[in-house]
Length: 415
Image 1 (cartoon, helix red, strand yellow):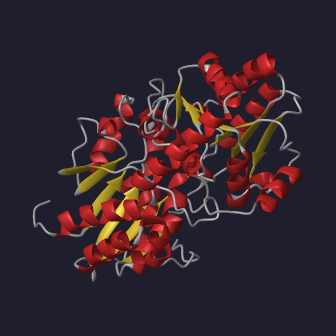
Image 2 (cartoon, helix red, strand yellow):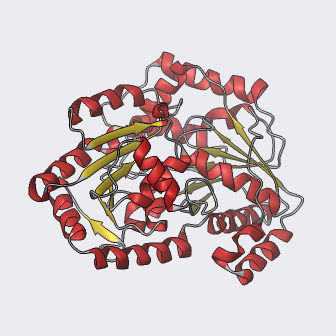
Image 3 (cartoon, helix red, strand yellow):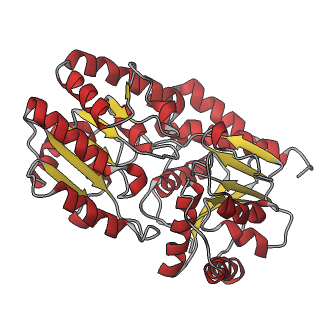
């Protein structure tokens, strides 16, 4: 399915953020790539960081003269049950196995998409994550194929990784968030490191008036006069919302007035989300100061933006994390982040500079209390966070990194 309902984006809109010289440099760099075309393929147009990135990245690349399209595979819910197992196994679940029937369905859905659902009308195809990975096996051509992995592969289930490795053999390159995520068995001739990014002009990250922030808080019964702890992310065991609740309870026990917001979206390619959400609600109990909110209650990009700007401190207690764009978003809004040092979070939360790195709810609660009691420290860390994101994790930097990868692939006749 071709995704066409995308916002208009021009590189010139980012001038006030990155400066005229940087905009001119990107335009100049893109000129030698004009005439080339790119198709991004993933598994969902809504929910999760990949879709959010593509929503801005695709129109921005088009604005630079590189014809870019975004396609989403079509699949039944059974397929996503299987790919969720693959995701969990690649992130370290050793107890997962794929049956012959599951593997067959996984492959056949991709075959159908490759042969009759996807257009793939470009000279480069960038495939995101394991869901659409096998489509390359059913397309016989000499185009450039790139696998963009958004998962931490540092300690995978080796049996499931072997399945993925076989499908990667025909790819020209693979791209990972961090060097430590590149498993030694990845067979692509070229391997790149590129962290993801946020779009400061998107509804989730653009500046919004305080009146809108207060309106959103009022709509969901959040008290703007009490400290707000916020964790944004899918309802997934890897995100550890239970740890966020435990942290909140320890803080509340010690200083009293505090609230916790757990905010996430339920994406259609994450069938476990609804079931896990119910477990989180049960664990939270009837505490009126715990607010668990999703897109089912009307929470969209603007609402998340408002919650992040209203938050006193942002938590991200993920046990495993590919990157953690919710952290990037919070830093961009000048909020200190208390987080576990998981995956790409380590690139963002610089301990004692943009927030605190912790190992458990007890440590997290101490960091939170310290920050609540020191508003000047929160302000200083917030300023550091904005600077750090601007330098490293803005969408224009993401585009530049893609341009460099494409330039290298187009400039050589080797695989």
